[in-house]
Structures are given as structure tokens and as C-alpha cells.
Image 1 (cartoon, helix red, strand yellow):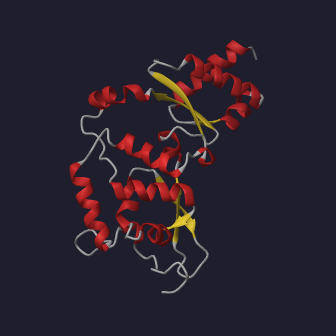
Image 2 (tube, one colour; image 1 turned 135 degrees about the horizontal axis):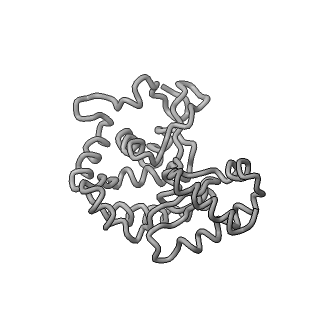
Length: 219
């Protein structure tokens, strides 16, 4: 297949899909070598780069069209008048710990932060930045958490091996979230972290039924 045809075909596929397409699937269905697809991706990244309103991003072995972050405020003001709530400081700290320690249990996160993290985790799950990836093979089978593809896309990395040092990640999270501050979020999460409930003494839904077991296996 000629280079121009490869580029145009890939461009069309990404436009129609909207979601990320695995490079392996593109190679299979178009009967192309991985090197051919990767070279096409590089050419399209050059075409859709700089000040262009659309960028081509790669993450977790996938490629996808995305809006240029430079125009995020304008896009939000037109398409999303009610901006998403910003993450609280506890949620940002919890996210950074999960990113570097994954897969990790809630109690392991709490042992590092020194406070209850139930509602920080709930906020991260709601924003699809972390997900439940399994259960630890220990007493009580506690849930294990890891980051999602949304996390990779949001922070512009292909996989977790490309994470910056922890302080740089925390700063990057803070820069992103400060663009849409929610004055009530900090108060909510600071309150929730005092007792791990929703204010009515209720455990978050995603932790219902999970045995509360310490990290060393003691109840």
C-alpha cells in the first residue's frame, strides 16, 4: 500500500472511530507491518500538531484523535458550561500514590497517606482515572487499584513506565485541576477523610462487602 494511501486510510479510521484504536488491530485489518503504521502515525502527528485544533495522541499501544489542550478552556465554555469538578488535594495525592505503587490496596494507600482514602478513591473512580484491577491474594481479598487509559491520555503518556518523578506528577495533576476549581470539593473530601463515610455513616458503595483487613493480614 502506498504511503499516501496508508496515511489517508488511517486518518479516516481514527476520525470515524473517535476512540483509541490498537496499533495491532490496525496492522491486522489493513495487512500492514507495525513499522508502516507507526511511521504513518508519526506523519499524522506532524500534520496534526502545533497550533492545529486536533492532535494525534498515543497511549497504551493505541492511537486516537484528541483536541489540542491549548483550546480546552474555549471548548469547555462552548460544549460544557458546567465544568467537571476539580479533584481535591487528597484525591490528587491518592492518585499519585496509585500511579507509582499499582496495583495497590486502599489500606496500602492509607498507610502512606496516614488518613482514610475511601472518598478520594471514589472521586478517582468516578472520573475514570483509576479502576479496580483485581483482589490481593491475602486474608480478606482486598481490592487492588490501578490507573486507567483515561489517566494515560489525560497526562500524555504511552504507559506508566513513562511517568515522571512523583513530585512532577503531583504538580502536573495540580496544574490540570486548577483550571476548574470547585470550592466545595475540598471541604467535602476533608470531611469524608475524617471518618471514611458519606456523612450519614454509610460506607461508599464500591467498598460494600469488602473485609477490612490490615496490611499485615490482621483484622
